[in-house]
Amino acid sequence: MFPVPTQGGRPLFEWRWVDRHLDEIFERLGEHITLTAAALAIGLVVSIGVSVISLRRRWFYVFALSVAGSLYVIPSLGAFAVLVPFTGLTSFTTAVIPLATYTLLILIRNIVTGVEQVPKEVREAAIGMGFTRSRLLWQVELPLALPVVIAGLRVAAVTTIGLVTVTSMLGKGGLGYFIRNGIQTATPNPTSIIVGVGLSVVLAVVVDLLLWLGGRALAPWSRKAAR
Amino acid sequence: MSIIDQAIEWLGEPNRWSWTDPAGVPYRTVEHLQFSLVALAISAVLTIPPALWLAHYRRAQFLATSAVNIGRAIPSFGLVILFWFLASRLEVDTTFWPLMLALVALALPPLFTNTYAGVLQLEQETVDAARGTGYREWQIMLRLELPLASPVILAGARVAFLQLVATVAIGAIVNDGGGLGRYIVDGFALGDPGHGEILAGGIAVVILALVCEGVFALVTRWVTPRGLTLQSRAGTRA
Image 1 (cartoon, rainbow over the protein chains, first blue to last red):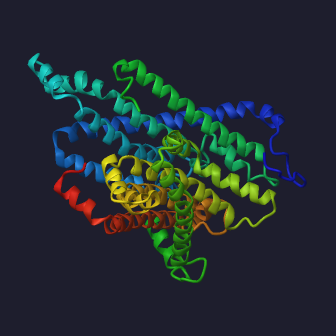
Image 2 (cartoon, rainbow over the protein chains, first blue to last red; image 1 turned 135 degrees about the vertical axis):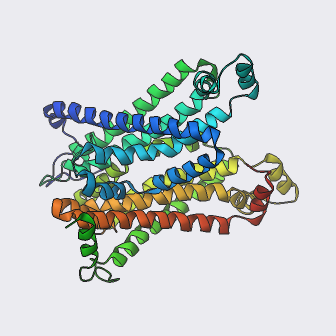
Image 3 (cartoon, chains in turn purple, orange; image 1 turned 45 degrees about the vertical axis):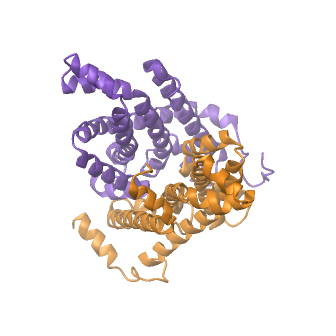
């Protein structure tokens, strides 16, 4: 640990504080998970839709990627700021729209790449068996693309969990609330900051691991391909 | 008065277009770019040489692959506040270094991983050919691997730079500066009357990021060795 002098400030970590704020910690953890899940769900639904069209129309894929790429470039605080006057400072919508938007680039790219790498033989065999185009997509191509899609989803999830903390500037923020609160009291409260940052990292690692395990369970043939 | 009108009125306030007054959009834009560019330069100096060396000798592969994942999991917002707190506790200057250190820390992983990956993807035959021609190891690193890996390194630098531009704005919460993020944070504090300032500040940050992205794409094209572009035009390289 750092040789930090403690005079004139609170100790670096107080278990007492954690103990006294346990209920609030769980509540904010829940908010963090809700925001992340909502953003990922919206992002995934939109991405699947865009990808289905992209797989049929090449020019649309190029177009979709450049739009998603530009949206991805937008700084999170800037995106929130542009939305606040229209959707309100503390609304769920203001927080979720940018978070969902940032997942689009990686999800669209991975879904399309995943489907395109399905071996031609498999596709031809399915068509030979009388699969229609949409059954081919939903029952053959997308399941086979799953490892690549999950890889994208993992990156999107970890990124989103980190970004949720920024929404504390909108009075939300899940665990970011503790980070922000740590410097808003008269004497800074390091315990609050450490709890916020630490739990956010732990949540990211746990979700990443769960998605990885989920991917392995759903696509057992891909053990060596999964990144 | 509509929100758009509020934003336009805000843009018309005195000193709003000053280069020297902290209220000025140009002043804050320069400040924003300064923080981002200095942090990028420091990170590049800290990561590219060791990554080149480690990749050349194929060491620390695990670090290279996991650096980006670790970096992604750490919330930039938390890092900014954590460094600010440490500086205030240590009673050192809190206006520049805490934010700068947080920014540098955020830019390290993508630069390191991409430099490493860029060198690793090169064909061993190319390196062996250079060795056979009498290149020393350091010459291979600097004259062969570095330029050939440059597109991948620049891609990493782009990712890092965009994150820096985004994080400088967040830095306004603890910093007197914070570039264009200053307006957004100030506007949030005002509540409803701040909507004009929030919208104008938000749009300014978005435009800055998009322009930076465009400039970065141009610089990448300009810096990339001609041999690599010719190859990719011929379609031999993915």
